[in-house]
Length: 151
Image 1 (tube, rainbow, N blue to C red):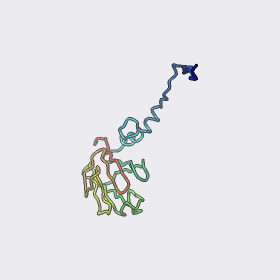
Image 2: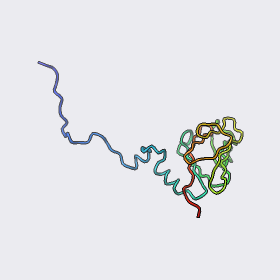
Image 3: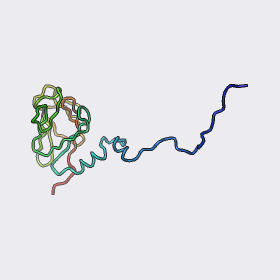
Image 4: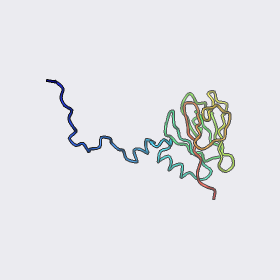
């Protein structure tokens, strides 16, 4: 005689064993791999012509959004900076985002100690492309330009 017990069949063999999550949950987690949640996509699509959006992807305040809608937007640790980045890895006057023409943006390092990075490369200045990563200290932003057309 054997001490082994036979395996039992599940009581309801046609029950689903994997939970499925709703679209809201999937969008919040960005399961599709685009890097953009549905809420962020809505914000990007509603940007007025000539503006852009920076979204913090890593670092303090992950998920924070900064609107670029002026000709010059200063970023740094100084309390009066347009984009206040409160971390010791950020210089008081670290970088500027400049609008060039109607809808092109550039980033310029202002002689910061730790530098400004564009897609992982330290730069003094760079023209920003949609979806590009900009790093200032511990902050990693993704840049999104307005999709709106001029009137």
